[in-house]
Length: 201
Image 1 (cartoon, one colour):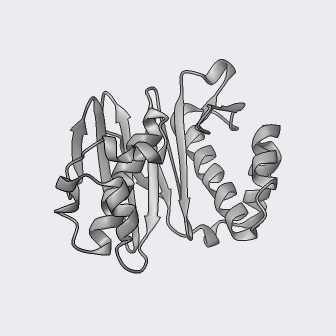
Image 2: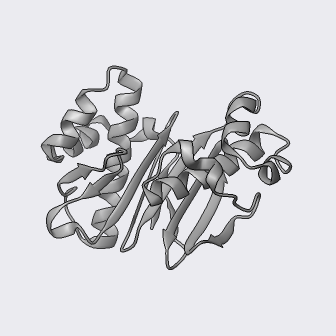
């Protein structure tokens, strides 16, 4: 299940404060270590989205204890280690995905021109041939990053995977993708076995 909050500025501060207070200590430390207030609010908003998703879909009243893999992928530990999740935030939006199988999510806000260096480093020649606008670039970037996050891989491995360009639904190597756009926000989520479901907050 994917939850997307496109306007984190509308989340009441007291709700963010409650989420922060209920977070496991490692997650509170992760947020407190962020120097930039805007980024700190984005990270907290992503956890607010995750808490809503976990309550609605899994009946969990708080975010369980979290550990991080060698590459920084957050994973639940303890009783909830059968629930897979991932978080994303960009600009004024935040998203979360949770599923009983490996899952990844990415969001990007439309900005500027096509970042040519990133495109050449991260997209295959076949993918690059279909990218002609910043919209194409950010839509495709979210697809690729959601896959890497689901797999627990680094962005440096993005070019190892060639995905269909421009399709809102597709499958690749056992992962099922759902992708979309809300205004200037591009999002993509993927999970094993079946296509995720989307909810806009």
